[in-house]
Length: 97
Image (cartoon, rainbow, N blue to C red; front, side):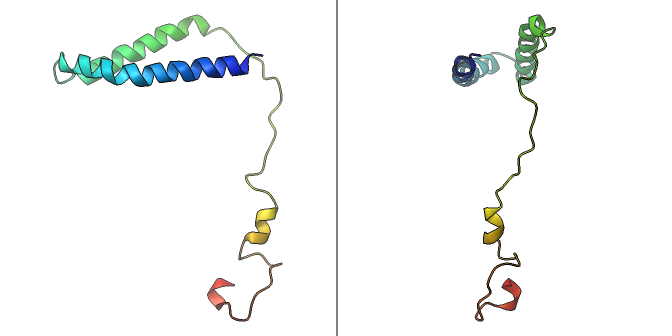
C-alpha cells in the first residue's frame, strides 16, 4: 500500500549505512587485531540476523501473478543487421550481410 514510503525509508537507511559503515568499520579495525575485519563482519551479520528474527513468520501474498515480458521489442529485429527483411546495399561487404 505504501510502496513510496517504504522505498523512501529503505533508501534513507541504505544511505545511513553507507555513511556510517565505513566510519565505524575503520574505527573498529584501528582498535582490533589483524583479524578484526572478520570480527566486525561477523558482528554486523549477527545484528542483521537478530533484527530479522521478529519477521520470520510473516508471509506476504503476491498481489499480481508474474507475467513474462520480453527483453526487447519487435522493433529491434528490424535494426539487427542479420535480419532477413532488411535491404542490403550493393556496397555492403559480404561478411556484414
